[in-house]
Length: 509
Picture 1 (cartoon, one colour):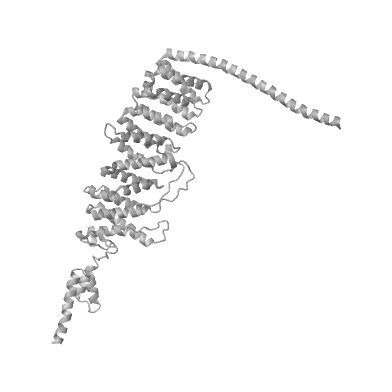
Picture 2 (cartoon, helix red, strand yellow):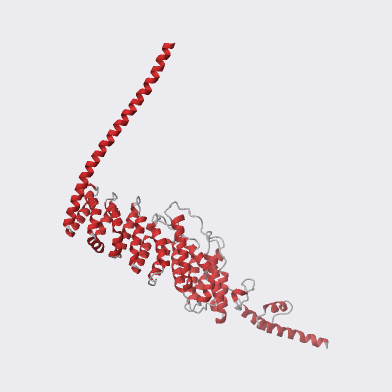
């Protein structure tokens, strides 16, 4: 009886082993395999297990998998069934959370290449359209992106104090860009996913995530800033709930740049985003948007590095004026407030922007600021820097600006006439003198009587100022002569006193 039972025992164990292996319990097959030899059925099941391997839950937490069984990330998407592709996608995302030091190419070279290939597989899988961005997948993508992208930049060692890159400086490229670029592609695919559940996604792309994303705009790599520009614009369009927070956060970055550091690499890219954002503002403009113009955009003219982002800044300002022409006078007042006095290149930038703003300015708004405006333009016409003088003269070729001047010529001509006359007589540059002559001809054709009246007034003031200057010189010389005589008398007294004391000393002796 006992022998019969023992004969039957191996057959039952083999059956149990096969059934357990068929259910995918690798632990049972391993324990019994140490005691009994593997049968043909066991080897077949083992070969199937090589296709889809189970991974320990200690490597990939169950919160990421959300009930789905984790798959070995080394496998290809072609080697697994459709039901397991989603689990493989999450497993590969978790594998890519490992960050390597890319500054040393010889260190962890194999691991770096494997990670890059895994990232490429992820992008291909996402681009194929078969991925479903469920909540575990969204969480895994955000975790992988945060781990790879969010980092502290090294201190800036640039010698330039202009803030950010200049035309003379070569851009700095991040050695980890081969990985970062693919990570940005995965994040962009997630944001642009058509069936993305925004309510679920915003739980993972929260305010903290957006703040860290905005910090990356200070990267010295222009390729990274360009990717960030696209991603932030997509987030702004997709997540409407985050729009006020993004505007406020960008304003804070601008405040810090203008009033504290004057150093930031991504101002131009952020302004480029806001150029399209401003064009989508609804009318009438909210008070928040007006404050953004007056407190953030206009003060951006203050830093020395305004030439780097002036094109984007001008576009934003013009978009505001296009929305509400009543803002033109506020913008021009801001330009006059921050007008450079000793930086000729910056002055050229201001004149170019001023011309674009004046093209959008209505007559009513122009009349509010025309006196201080043309007092400044008069100084530019008289500038010893020939490029500034030329650029100020060329503004008069603009048809809209010339119409504004024509309608208000009785106020404007007396403000600029003396500068034109002085240019004709005294400016060192022949091209500037020729431009001045052309403007005087245009003014004569506009209103010859007014020009003659300004000429007479200038001659009277010039002769009167000449007589006053001569009288002032005479008084000054008289004061100098009186002061010289008083000094001479004091010096003579100082010399005589010691002589008398020495004489008295000799007599006593």
